[in-house]
Length: 112
Length: 119
Image (cartoon, rainbow over the protein chains, first blue to last red):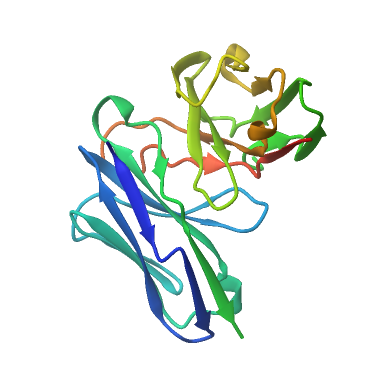
């Protein structure tokens, strides 16, 4: 069965304290791996898509990387406004290539 | 285009009542999805439309749930005889189907969600 596991479940950082979130996946065929940000009471907001091992993408303080088994979301010098739940999702190759399967997310809190 | 719109944003109902949610996708998007999200969990896939055709329904979607997308534009999700276990955030998303990997294919854009509370 296809699985997406995110760790840690929750992470509390001080402002400026860099860290990484992990997303490990077990799927039969990966078409793409997606990172979303979700603020309380809102829908997920798209951040990145990664398609092949070794690929990296950056946006402001965030950098996403991909290997054959996992993805990392690196947060450099975070600010309180980076506090949110970060969701990882996979899109499979083949017949189900239209939908996303999500992990449970990592709740990030950045204290000033 | 203001993105994916969902209505209502919040719905409180009594057990046994019927509720209906509406989703207006991004106008040029031909794919529309419904997901359900409960507290502390990631969104779970419910159903998917390509234009007006409903192409997949999750096992999570019991026969009390029905979704439509007439004319391939807006969509409705109806829950009949609601149960307390139906309490969740119902998320709608849309995407534009593109061929090929790495082409930005199928990036889902989500709406703000409709939160259902069943008393």
